[in-house]
Image 1 (cartoon, rainbow, N blue to C red):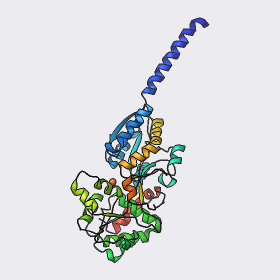
Image 2 (image 1 turned 45 degrees about the horizontal axis):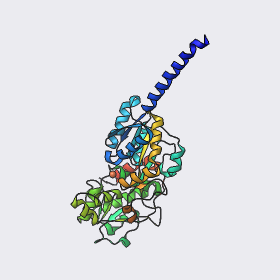
Image 3 (image 1 turned 90 degrees about the vertical axis):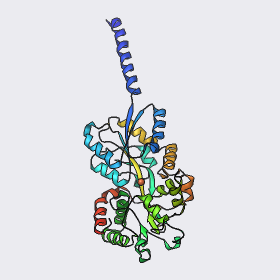
Image 4 (image 1 turned 60 degrees about the vertical axis):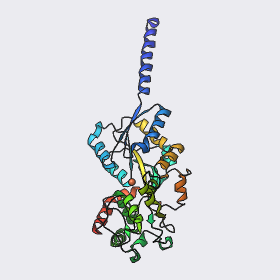
Length: 342
Ligand code: FE
């Protein structure tokens, strides 16, 4: 009996190994990315090469991608969501589109304020939102803090985009976190009172408006200036060259910082691969490339930013725990509304 069943055992074992092999080689991970393909794909290809895990990439607008994950429900093929702004990652978590991840690699690589306390999302890069100014009309000595922008000296001199933009909502949420509701409201009202024009366009448009003399100051994310300075479009380049960065609140809490980040989707079918990819994205080389390509700052300590960013100077960052930006988002939107921030 024994000797006859032996070939059978080998056969079964062979089939198992074969199946295991095909399962292993079929490993894949589906990425939904709000970052454009050229800003993320080279990294994903490198990951695929290193791990033999196939990466399928879907790109789209941040809010539309989240909506898609939610409406796909438990059948969603999404494994990893890559998006921008802590406020938005918080929204994704509130919409029950994410699952918590406990990873020592991620915890060791990403400072506590730049990841969700319960592990629902992790930062991949840092984005600063400083003051930008026209050096021919503004002396940096006259600038100090976000708070000081409500001073009457800046009447009709400030450009900033509208309140429906999450970057500004997060900025006001940081004001709320630091100063409470009444001060955040007074600040928003003061800032609106100093607007040079009714909010219009994106961050690049605010930088252009400063260059064109429509306003003297803007608040905008610094990577836009980097993109404009290296643009193939001469008009964008020459506009950006007329604008300088000022790092506010350096004597106090530091410049307002936000993140790009990633999270494992709640109904991920390839959880282990998704975590592996997330861990890969905080490796030293990936951090350097990702931050540099996007004109952002690496989230991992000890990685140098690109040369251009180094030339913008060192600065102190607000160390506010960014999940608070999410928690305070609704209140921030209400305050901006009350301040008539269009
Ligand atoms: Fe942006």
